[in-house]
Each structure stands twice: as C-alpha cells, then as structure tokens.
Image (cartoon, rainbow, N blue to C red):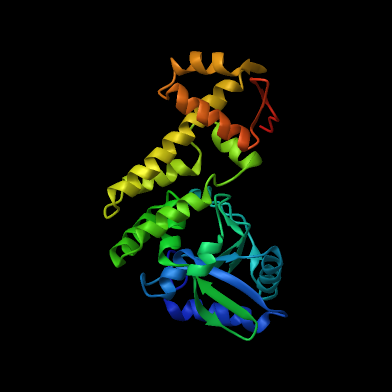
Length: 287
C-alpha cells in the first residue's frame, strides 16, 4: 500500500471494521463518510484514511478507546490539506489512520436526522454497526473541503447521479452551520473563512450541478458576506444606532440596506450582537 493509498480497496476497510468489532466491549454505532465510504463501495480504488462519525459522545468515547486498545496512536496532522478538517481525534496505526468525529465534522456539518435516515447499513458485527452516509450527504461533506482529492471524488459521485433536491434541502437544514464562538470567528474575520464560501467555490467550479443549486449557494454566500462585512465594521464601535448605522454603511457596502438589516437580525439570532432600543452592541468578543 503506497503512502497515498493506505487502504487499498474494500477488503482493507472491512478488515479494519472487523478488528474494531472484535475489540469493542459494548455496542456502538458509527457513520462512514469520506474516502472510506467511496472505497468500500468501489467508487475509487483506495483511500488515504477512514473517516468515522459518531452519533453520540458515548459512541465516540467507546470507539476511541477501542482504537487505542488496537494500537492506534493519537496524532496531530501536519499536512496543510488537513488544516481545515477539525477532526476530533486522528489516530494512526502503521501506514493507516482513522479520523474520528464526534457528532460534527470540521466544526461545520452535523449528523442530521435526514442523514441518519438516508444512510445504509453496510457492516453489522457483534457489537459494531456501521452505516454509510448517502451519496448526497457524502457529496456535501466533500464539497466543504479545499482538497483536490475531494473535488475529484465529488465529480465521481455526480457522475453516478444524486438527488439535487435532497442536497438543497440538507444545505438548508444545516444552516447556519454553527453558533457561538465558531460562527463568530468565521464571520468576524475580514478574510472569507466561513465554510459557506468553500461550498460556493466547490459548486462554482464543478460541472454537472444544476444552475439553480449553484445560484442558491451563491445567494447563501452573499448572505453570509453581508453578515461578515457588517459585523467586521460593527466591531470598530462600542455601540451604534441601528438605522443610522445601516444607512451610512450601505453606501460603502455592496449590500442593500434591506440585506444589511436582515443580516443584523441574523447576527442577533446567532448571539453575536445584542440589540436594545435600536442600539446595537456586542454580546461578547472572544477573539
């Protein structure tokens, strides 16, 4: 197995899952996504890693403990391609490694009820149940990263055919992707760090996506961009009068006054600003 193809085919994936099943001391459930899922189903011949997503923290702790018992060692990725992944645990054994996520991947997408319902049971052991996420959901997960390998996988999945209506619905269900500090850090940065911009970049540069879906994601990116611009400017002030500030800022922004008013309401909903008697103030500034 080469360094770029640590799990060569379905057999390597199944062998790893069987080892986990045999070592587990209690029942656990995981969801297979990423390269492990497409390799298991023969969409690609090999993968660099196996991505496992647990539906509960209890499952996460159970699987992590089992991997440690099997000789996997926790490591921190130094490869630039993994900088944005945000794996809860990365565990390495010889040439292979497993990225283990606790309910959420990359601090961006969460395991939704729809994802669970669309998943397929692909491994049923004595204690371990493994569900493969649907091709729709794997497409969405892979579209949230900048890696070229993931772009190629998405193209392969699109060629197989996926339900774009379900994909659009899942994007809506995932919004706003996060609350609190994570969302604050994404929006408050002057650079476009919010994950919706990565999704926009992926969809814009892919062939085979319907135009209405691409335009939907572009509109979502414009929505977040209005929040980002507005919040970045608001951080410069202790407090402002809402309407007067919006009216003045609209002359400097590419967003309309209505878009900025709506963006401000969303920032309040996300807990990033506080509005009292038309006065806008920061609730907190963790940066």
